[in-house]
Image: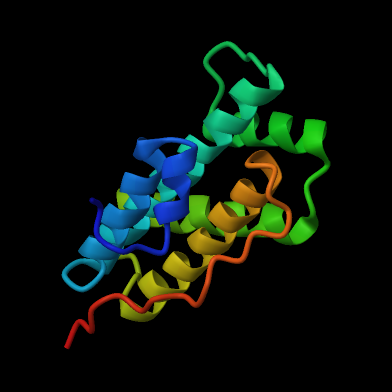
Length: 143
């Protein structure tokens, strides 16, 4: 049985999605920038899943192009769009900038944003619009 996680409900869709969230939570106390990078991968995997469900096929798209195509098809709520963009931009900083400013505060914020994105995904694509995920579980205290 998987350990408790803010992303456990994603197992219903794909073990990979749930594991990306769980791994980000495990990384947070030791390395918030790696946590943020893993959350970027979660957002990318969610986008790819949505594109596949919607029948969107692009030839070697960037993640931004694929997300734009999904957004055009679904007409995403601006808040959902903004959360996906935050995860992509912050994840890019973690991956490509040596002097990034990603610390525990940014890691925790990213975990909370990623969970909101995951809840939106689950409500939308899991046909559970009334899904209540319960309270956000704080990861281990890094101190």
